Image 1 (tube, rainbow, N blue to C red):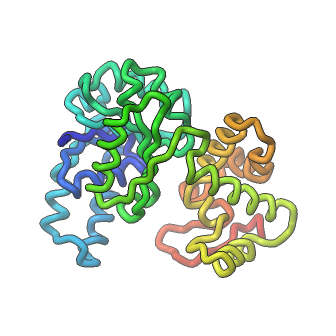
Image 2 (image 1 turned 120 degrees about the vertical axis):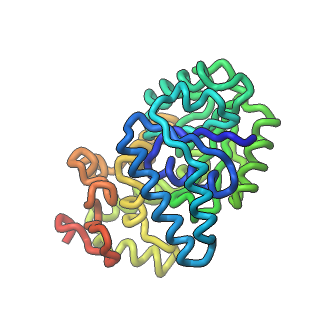
Length: 295
């Protein structure tokens, strides 16, 4: 497998493209907006500069990595020569199903189709294709160039051969693949999102403040980042989407998203991506400042 196509130039997509290209694969990065591709390439270059500064790679490695990434706005052409397609579009069921139908119609017969979804059923996605045995989940963690884990999620029909291929490939990328089965939230988000939701409920019910809740979890539970800061980092809209998948999938009210989270997303307070969530996020400023509404 040499040719990788990544669908989506956002945070996850550009990180996935970065990692594959850095490990010698030819990568076609597809996004419908050329501006998004320009931004993705600039982000990859900046992240490679960080690796050069830390002496993890050389300037020559950086340039070779960038040369292996080929931006494209046409999905049909972008997947036509792919051995593996990794979809990293927005966490939206209808959008992913639409994309997978189009990928399936245009990718080579033997290509493996992977999704970076953090919660949506692999079986549901595979069902809209004519190759469900070749559909699998590759859930990378953010930031992709740094985080080691890849959840490899088997759909109902995913073949043993495809699963082994993706497990082996993930290891070649320097990641630690963990095989899991296709249930709502998989492992990572089935455990993480209820914790984040409970932290938001603790704030909503006046148990404690934003920084206090995060401090308890950082110092008391040895978490590198508090749950409210992490929610901002992930994106509050993404957290809400995953909680709704869990609620629908299990039919259990314990997964119901906190009303505060729903209101914040409705108001456009999405965390880092919007500049404000539980904290104010100013580019270039590392100090955490609690958002005005929570002081």
